[in-house]
Length: 432
Image (cartoon, one colour):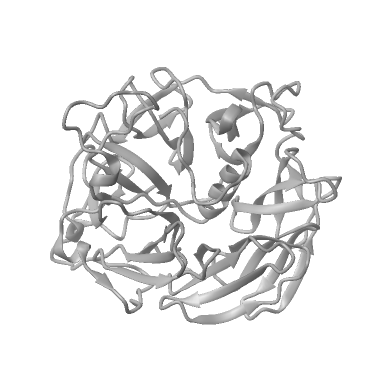
């Protein structure tokens, strides 16, 4: 798995694919692998109203998270401790292979086995939440701000009825399924309690739209986005506003559809897409030239109070040979740690790798011992980066906690812990 799969249901450039994936994961990170629990395998058609603070029965709550490599029942999740740095991951007992590799005799193939959604604590203990059946194409979209729900997009190529979305109640594993209008994309939860979802259609660039729907798929609001809208949206942490991508920077809109401030970015790269929250009041945005959309891009920190934005990276032409960006065709996300600022870079043919930001806004590739292709970064857990990559020469994808200061990593899930392969992950965010 040299190239970590991001989203395969739309035809986009590798860099734009990576950017869309970063935006979808902007609010939180989740990874899911289901356990064989009866409650986890059931599907509900009714919305579940989460409490603001998820809680397991007091008689079964454990004092501390599960230790590294330990699998514990869903009933023992210490919800009072679940928060920034915890992860959701999708795990499969099948092992992924590079093109041309020969699988072992009788080895299960990914399309023939169920996938499990796991909640993973920062130490590497895991809790099975639910399972997705063999052949499922459900992939992560979001993790609700109150920690209680995870959102998935079930991709159905060629379906006349369109795709579906699945909201999973992480407290009991129950799944709520609702339709996504044909050609639409669920962007994420519109509210921190996971009771509404933002969906959008991006195929018709002349008439783009953004809607909020409930967990039955019923429309609550169509936002009056204008011609400058760039088909990307990021709710504020409290759900009171939405940050919209725009050809003129970013734009705010209230949750009732009332237009708010336009957040302009200096210079030529004014067409911006919100990636995620850098702090509680600052959006990390990826910006391009509105008059000549190309591969050229730059990451900006944009305060939503209207203060002047700050460039995080230098301008990258996307050719892979700029001074200071050799081998780097674009940077789509960033994280700040005590050991430095790190960016998700896109290489040739869409391969993802980890870079360190230099003082002048350029990048230097990070070489991780035992991880020849550093893969996709999913977020931050404490002073470590969480990423998906092949580790130790094995064929399957692993969920890793990488310590940049020591240049070492710990396997949290996958081949070196419980076998199989990790397909996707999301990290519940702090900021940066």
